[in-house]
Length: 75
Image 1 (spheres, rainbow, N blue to C red):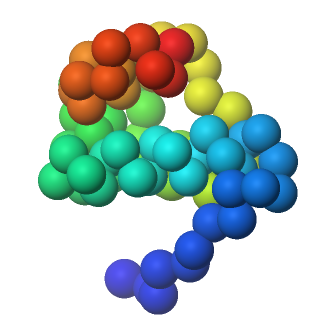
Image 2 (cartoon, rainbow, N blue to C red):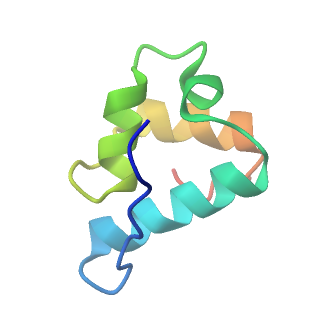
């Protein structure tokens, strides 16, 4: 596993969104694998969202809200 890179949440809206996703995922004690389990997406896709390189589709946002218990935050 490579070194963890900190995300500059002020760089853009996707970067802020991604930083919040990583923060809430880690606060819930979940790995990327555990978070995408049961969805149609892979860990690399979610990682790209966390790094602000990709936007989150609505169906994945709903899944993440369910898994992390974030009550519609990502949707």
